[in-house]
Length: 337
Image (cartoon, rainbow, N blue to C red):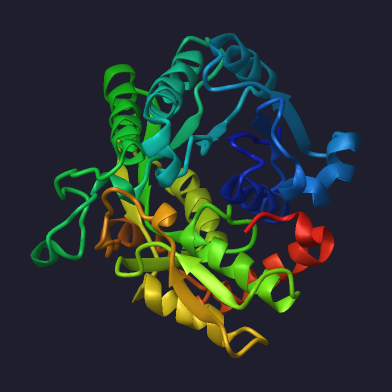
């Protein structure tokens, strides 16, 4: 009997790469939860499979609609659940804090309630929190381990604290096999352009195509990040649910390449075919407060699973820029800077 997996947020960057990974490395039937208005561009290379119902099945629903989540659970009957769907943009959360908190905390609760109350369902569940829960960590407390105090620096980060705790609560209260992860910065092809490295890559691709002047507009360049590739991240998530899953466990996951946003931007500029690109601060791209030191201790997860990142930072940045070059060549000036 084939295993069945439910991926919430299957059309996002991480969800679509997880779909790619599971199709290549397992024989599972994969069910993807997406909203009615979700764009399909990240999974369009699988539309043939989807239309043929060849291992990939889409079900429409919303984290804010409990009945649709009940339907998705009944349809999928999952052995594994990867809960990736969220309002996942920290900058947006400052403008929409209530929607962010509702979607991420109550939405996670609704999903876990649907799983808990379905009598035929007892899956291994991955609840994806975020490294943003740690927020503003003093330098002397680096690297950040799992027991580091939460100090969230945005409504998004607060919502992910709630997501993390809700997942752990359902594991402890009801004996559900739920693990939560605090994934540190992860990026690559299909990264949304609300994130720094992706908007930089997008602007560079538009500069190369001659659509905008040779100026990259930026926000805060001083934050320190530890970078991982999204393709390494989804492999970690697969290992999380398949290697001795421990109910209530929580893990930091992240890469090994540490550099500031400024160095990341310089790497992207060095990959460009245009050599006179200037950098300009855009006040609209600045957050009111920022999590400025993101360096994880991932020893716990590595010891449990043996996972290690495989993609280099240079390869990730190259693939991200090439992704935007392809998008720009298709859409041209229709893209917004």
